[in-house]
Image (cartoon, rainbow, N blue to C red; front, side, top):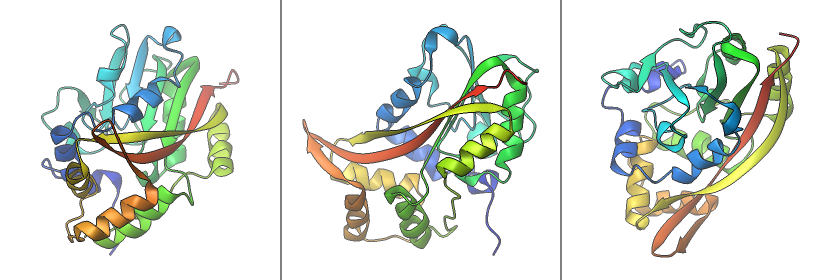
Length: 247
């Protein structure tokens, strides 16, 4: 069976990822805030979130920023006024029309990242900012997604996660100057039961691991209890890429 593309993975209008985010909408607040903090917000007037999922980042941005959510999958864009459908290599925006672009936790499923990065460079204004954040290659989360989720999701999971040098080189070739950083944060839940239900839906664990099997996998990432909340440690590597003056 061939590997599924991003658009195929999330094609169902009732995709479980979207359902998880709707049922526990505040679980990943710290993740979106971490991404917001990488932006020089005073210099951002227009921002593209791509792929935007359900447009979750928008509520964490200042009101003065004009937000555009673009999505590669109809499973998120169908019936959602916050996002519009597009393809990876053809973004429906004018040249040099945006001051910032964010791509959060999805690049590992894209078919041709170079083509996507080139399109991002095209729509960014001179010295515009591109925030690329995703799972780092060979990290604990790489193991969780490409081993545990791959075992218990009937679609499998074969993400091509980010390597610092490789991605920096690719971004440079596509017209960017980059800085690299990592961000650790907690997903937050009312209790362990809510955390397990969220993980089952978000990662589409339709082959039904037991609660103990799922809990054991999540404990490898890091679970803690604080102020009547259950917290799951998550981490992303982030490239803060500025459109090169050579473009």
